Image 1 (cartoon, rainbow, N blue to C red):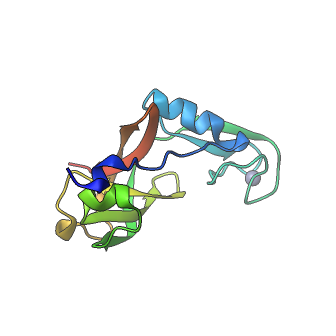
Image 2 (image 1 turned 90 degrees about the vertical axis):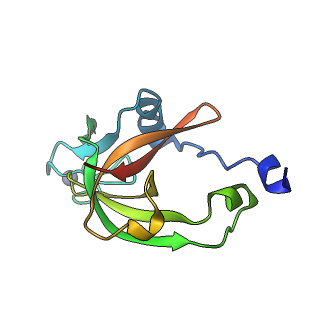
Length: 138
Ligand SMILES: [Zn+2]
């Protein structure tokens, strides 16, 4: 066994504003902050709408579908816990609700990933935390 397998992957630490996002992820639901004033989604979570600064913000469940806006294929690990995953895809996914998330594309050879491919959310379990990731939609 290499040393890489002994190092754990980092775990997201929710900010006070993102607790509902992570709690929903445990139930395999993707929640997004939505402004009840200007009726737009935004991300990352905040107490104020990123578009109009209203504090009239609620959590709304995303359809969990979108497209690959941009991506890179990592051929080098910048954290030893990810060495076993090389090569892997880090992507900006644009959800159908219009917000963009930085995530990984799982379940497909990295060299087949293209911009504008349709994706859907999936959840990776990591030490009790459920992390939204994406896979190609059929
Ligand atoms: Zn707003």
